[in-house]
Picture 1: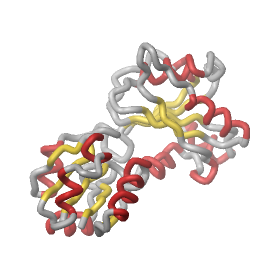
Picture 2 (picture 1 turned 120 degrees about the vertical axis):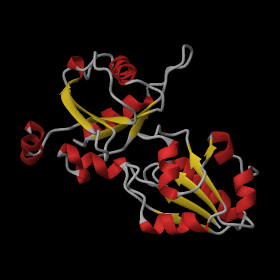
Picture 3 (picture 1 turned 180 degrees about the vertical axis):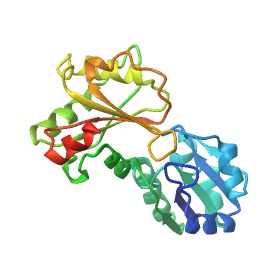
Picture 4 (picture 1 turned 180 degrees about the horizontal axis):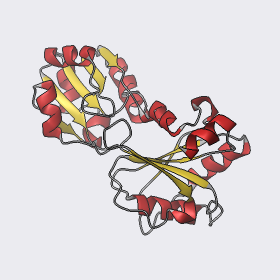
Length: 237
C-alpha cells in the first residue's frame, strides 16, 4: 500500500488519520522538491516519531524507483506539504501506481489553495492558478503572465505560486518583466508561511513591493481582480 499523505501547512496540521497511517508504514518518504517546508525535517520526525527519507523529483517520477517497488509488498508513506493532490506531479504518480496495481490511500490536509482566503478574498472568485519558475539565463518563460491576463479578462483573482528557491524579490522582478510593467500599478498581495504562527500577509502596488525582502519561504502572490465591497473592507484591516 502506498499512502499519499498531506501534512498541511504547519507542523501541527498532521491529522490523526495521517498519524495512524504513518504508524503502520515501514518507510516514510518526504517529497522535497515542490515546496520548502516552513520548519525542519527533524521537527517533523519528532511529531511522527519516525525517520524520514527525502524524496526528490527523480525518485517520485521514476516508476521503477525504490519506494514504488517497496509499496508493492509493504506499507509505504509519501508525505507531501499541503494537500497531496494539489500538484499535478502527484496525480501522475497516482495514475502510475494504479497501472502497476499498487493499492493507494489518499489522506487530505490543508492547502494554500484554501488558506489564501485569509487575505479576505472570496475563493469562488479565483480563476486559474499559475506559478513563477526560476528563470535561467537562456530560458525565461512568461506563460504565467498569460494566465493572469486570462483571469483578468473574466474579472477573476489569480493565485501565483512561486518556485522553490526563488526569492520574493526575484519573483516580483520576473512578474514585472513578463508583464512589461503593465502590472506596476496593480494591487498585489504577498502571503508568506500561510497557516503558521509566522505567517505574513502584505499588500501594495507591485511597484511599491519591488524592494521587498526577508520573507521566508514558502510564499505566494495574489493578484486581485475588482473587489467586492466586503473584500475591500477586509483588505483595509
